[in-house]
Image (cartoon, rainbow, N blue to C red; front, side, top):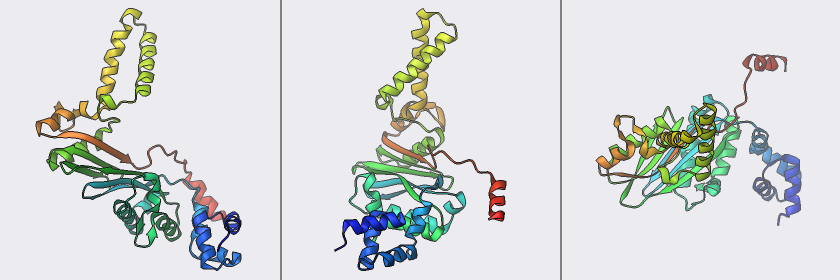
Length: 290
């Protein structure tokens, strides 16, 4: 029986995760020094050292199986690694593990298994093999009914991935809608789904902006309402002008083909990650002088 105290001690010594420490102690019959060696041999302490480094490159991908789909982002530190075959295989295996699991909570996706290996173990082993920090950053698990279809689209080798759910059975429409989403990046499906707090904040900004332009106060509300409607048209998918036919909104395009957009997910690699500014010359000099 491995005690919690021993696991804690090994964790403090190596910086490895709790489950990895417990596994190492089990494998070495509770021998602390042997467990440290086991962690090193399995690349886990090496992985922990890399875990603090910014991983803002990578791939967004999706896997569809029947009425279930997973769209997710796996990050690496460099785009060179993101194009590596080992990394690409890792991304594929992660998707297969999640879509074939019973997991419905994205936060538990790292516990999904492919064979005997969890997604978390895949990442740790990938870090040890590739030599960069790798993370499973975002996971969306989407389900549909038998009367609905999935639409998917990947742009620029996985820099952008889109997954939609549509009523109707027109795969071409589903693909067209996905391509539109990739290009125009809508924030919401329709006006009813727009966050009320966000909209009020934008409205107040527009009020102040209009007043600062010197417009008379008695017409400010009318001007602002016009600007709000324009804003909503720009951020709501169904109200956007369809890229292939600007005479139609995306919603009307779907209706024209007896389809209705139910939901969508759009992921773009590195969204929201603050990337470290790299000085390549300084990096080379540091390596030379090391």
